[in-house]
Every structure is written in structure tokens, then in C-alpha cells.
Image 1 (cartoon, one colour):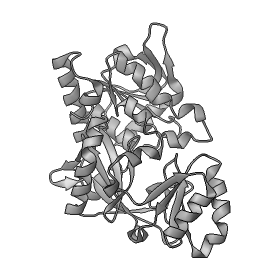
Image 2: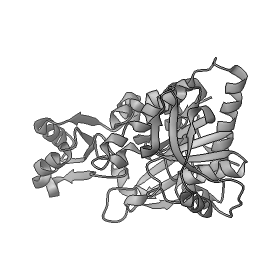
Image 3: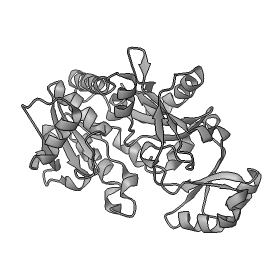
Length: 346
């Protein structure tokens, strides 16, 4: 199998991230693995995706860190979509905001070209195009979601604040990783106008009900093919605990990962989101849970598999690669019969 991973940039991708872990798992299973930065995509005159990429072959490594550091030192080579079986879109568009705005939509636009060339593209690029901001989350059943409005109207947001008894979360519609997320209450109400203005500079604002359980952080669960990812009865799940003075529980925003047990409540939430994820061709997804509500659905580059694997002494990357191998097998058996959106979660 020839599989390529699109990342934001070779210089910013860290060797202990989830994507290098997935690449290393594929490499160990004998596959040809390529890493492509968003800026290295191009369209060839023959109608194919053409990319500059980095790859390594015929060497043994003791860890994903030594493997990916070796990949980063390699010179660029060029491949086209004719050479690939699978293209895995693992870049995060939110990381490009205000830095490389041109890069936000590039991966799924070029992913659509690769898909037309017969490459399996994960997650399904057409659905990713509609999920580039948090409005995608609003299409899931209301029972899953905290009370929310999305607006740029100061008066509407203030009215919501009052209705929520002067306690709410404000965050941008587009973005992730805990950037520009604020908890507003009576103590900082005097900064409400200023906070709304600051977030509104980048677009629409999400005003969301504050859940008291959020003080304990959130629970990140990885779903594959719409189902909770598990290995030998161990689930790919962790509690992300806030630092004492920060409402953000994202690991790189100061959150601390801890082991947590799967519960019936979490399984129920996962079961409710499953039909839409399967329909949309969302192969690998991270859902963030607080109490009995879903706070966010990460369909672009759900991370944490490296942390979770170490936490439970289990390899959660290899089952992902095995699932992709099965998709390649199905595609070869059925030729052009299966649509990418269906194959993605099959």
C-alpha cells in the first residue's frame, strides 16, 4: 500500500505527534509512506495531483520519534496521485488562521482531485469542506449540544449572557486548540464588549452555555469508522484536565492528560454521533465530552493517540492502519463501485 499524509508543515510537525505515529505504524507494516506539507501540493496539467513529499525506505527504527526525525532530514521527492492508494488529510486548517490563510482549504480541495483520480481520501474531502468551522457541530442532534448561539450581534450575545445567568463561554466559530476561548461571568462582565470585539475581528462568535463539569476538564474519545477505537478492551480515551487558572483543557494549551474509564453515558453519546459521521465519511474523529454533552467534534486532525497509547501501554495506531488496509482491499475488489464517502467509514 502507498499512503500519504498531509500535514501543515514539515518544520512544525513534531516527531511525537499522532500523524508521525500513524506513519510509523504503516512503515513498520511494510507500506510506502509519504509526508506532504500543505504548501507542497500542486495540480499537474494531465489532471493529476502532483506533490513534493518526504519519504524514507529500507531502514529500521526503534521509535516513531527516530523514524520521523529521519524523514524530516530527507530531501524532497515528487509523486502524483497515480502513485497513491490512500491520501490521509491530517493537517489542521485552524493552525493556518492569520498566518497562511491560503492553506486553510488547500488540503481538501486537492484531496477532491486525488479522489477523482481513484485515490482513497480520508477523511472524505467534500465533508471536510463543510466542517472547516464549528458550525458543522450544530448539525448533530440538539440533545448532544450545550445551549449555543452563533452571532456577531453584541445585543444578542449580551441577551444570551443574561439568560445564562451571567456565565458563558465565548469562542470563535473558526479555530481550535483553545485559541481565543473565554469564560465570561459577573467578575469580568465589564470586559464583555471588548472580548466580543476581539473575537469578532476573525468572524462569527460562538456563545455557549457554561457547563459546571467543565471545571474538571473534558474527555477526549477517538472514534474510527464511527465506533470508539479500542485495543484488547482498552479504549482510546483520556481525561484532559485544565490547569488551575485556565478553562482550556487542550494538551498543548496547558491541559494535563489522565486515564479515564469508558462509561455507558459516553458510549451513548458516541452512538448518537455515529450515523452522521458514517454518512459524512469521517473515518478518524475526536469527540470532546463534558458531563453528558458534546463540546466539540474534531474531524481534521484529532490528536492524542500518542499520549493515549503510552497511557494504557497499548498501540492504538496500528489498528487505524489495519482499517485503512481493509479499505484498499475493498476498493480493489469492487473497483469503481464504492463511493469514497462510503468507503471511508466501511
